[in-house]
Length: 74
Image (cartoon, rainbow, N blue to C red; front, top):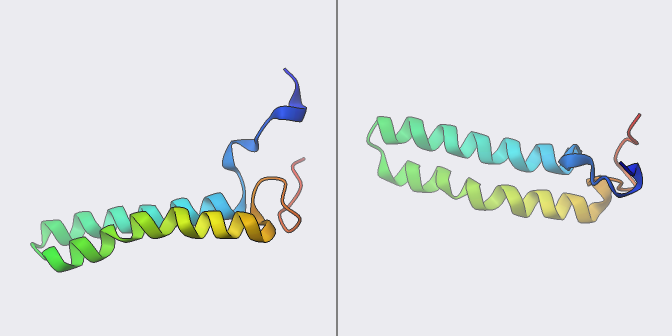
């Protein structure tokens, strides 16, 4: 395979941050659903929208795969 076209599978600070935000939102939403707190379920589910936005903004700021501020792969 040609490594020049490998996108890096999202292994970057931007991707990790976006996924972590969404994981926290899904976990908190599940917990609040279990405790029957609908307002907090909806509030935590909003993190599922915020995560990709933060990841995209970080990637545009240079923290994405191959970005100027992210660590080069080994």
